[in-house]
Length: 102
Image (tube, rainbow, N blue to C red; front, side, top):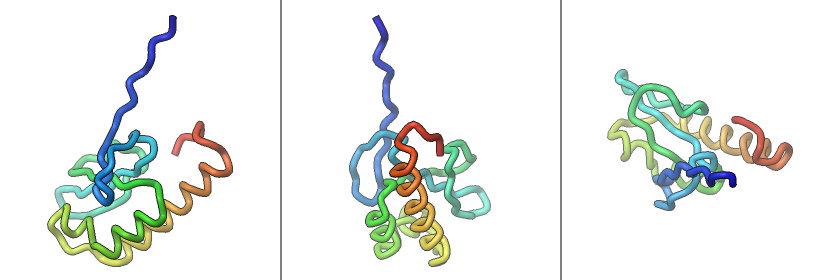
């Protein structure tokens, strides 16, 4: 009998929902206070998760969510990069399905 694998869950900091880790993207702040997108989920630093949903990424920009979470001022360029990244990942999932590694 095959064992059911545990699905790691993480909290979306914009909506507050718990979701499977694969449906989220990790944003990380390193020791130099640089904030970046972490597709691998393994970069060193303080991480926060946001859903792979363009509307939620846009809401994060409007509310400046990551400025508040990481307690630093983040440039608009980062939020624009996040929206583009999420949009790209959503398109990939529609094309290839959920089995693709991102």
